[in-house]
Image (cartoon, rainbow, N blue to C red; front, top):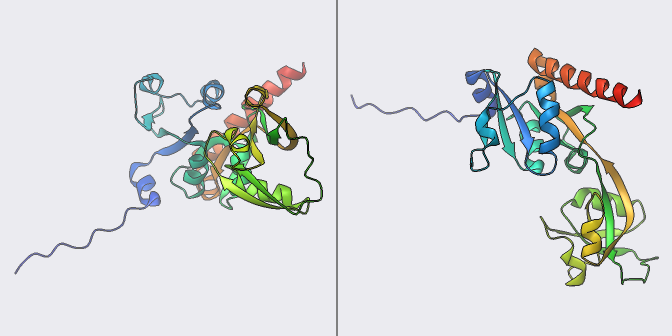
Length: 239
């Protein structure tokens, strides 16, 4: 009798988590990470030494906890990994949470770091107020938030999706206005732009997968640890 191999069973994130027994903690590359690391350490999440090696191109790292690994991905992808259960816990800006609005994502703790704002901007030389218009072209990497913001003003926003170099869009005629993150406003000024509207204030949040939060006590314990740290910092600031 000739042996016929059985079809391979598709590997899912749920199977991976079950077989490894590990928690996966997703953290973002970029501006939030440096502020997040001390907060994580106080909550008992400390990456292996290789994480701090600038030449290390790995995306997955161990931690001082044998039951936890870190993955370092783009901020938008943090929310996706956690919402779909590939990671159980993560840290990401509230801008990302608002943009995707995943039903399976729960953001129980405001970490009070990574503060900035999502704003509308245009060329400082563009003094003609776009009042009374019903349609605008806007360059942004936040099409959902942008569309909702202008819809509240009775304006249909045609969103041109960009991942970076947003400040170039008005001067090159791609879009009259942009919607982007603003911290100090220096980048806008250096590119001849001015902030015209503030959409939302942003801070970094601890996020968890809703199902994992309900079924894995380790996730609930992490939420409690991060919440206790946030409350302690808040009390010290108030003192």
